[in-house]
Length: 284
View: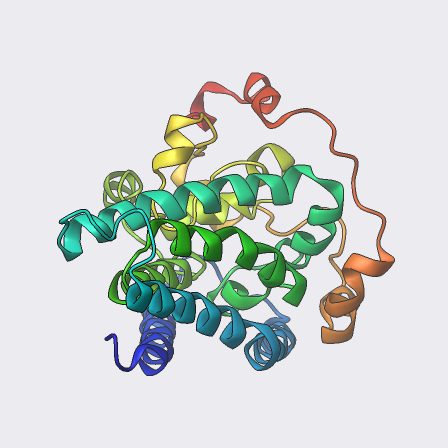
């Protein structure tokens, strides 16, 4: 894994996508939308733009920083005798904590929401939504994680393993996969499940501004931003945003220009105030 980190990460992403596509075909959660083909074309197009210009660069830099720190023995953890698994657990906690607060910022800071709305503007949720992100979002996120890799001194193998876990969970979480209700209720305390994350893409803002965690939902439960709603609702609830719902809004050119031509929503109420509007059945 250390000597072939690029190939390992790419292969992991491909395997996760194929696995999710198969499960979507066999156990779909929602009926296929009429505009699936056009959605896929534009989502995959944006994915290719990101992979060609940003995603590979941020991944290479993160692993490169880990390599440099390992060779120079730089980092707070270098002199602590910890094996791979405790280091991986620590990495998951640290990077998921950063990802949680960054994701909350994407929803509360207007200029960040301009960028992140590209992801939320998809009117359905499936495996192609995973990488429907504006390139600027990846560039803004990288400076938050890379210094932590250097400061703490996580080994290359740990960094690669965490990225594999996060990628795999993220792909499955965005997929149109139906899990039995009891299975979902159990798993959502351990990992981000498709139903758990689908609610984050609901067009009702009190749900959009919830369930922020990327792979492990721990910090949503700790900070009171975990939400749920009746199991049956997921089959029919409106996804996406109450605006940007036309096919033109999801064209590749529109997605790339969206942060620059659209006036963002007002920040409005702090996230915690949405709790007062939730009914008892919407609380986890």
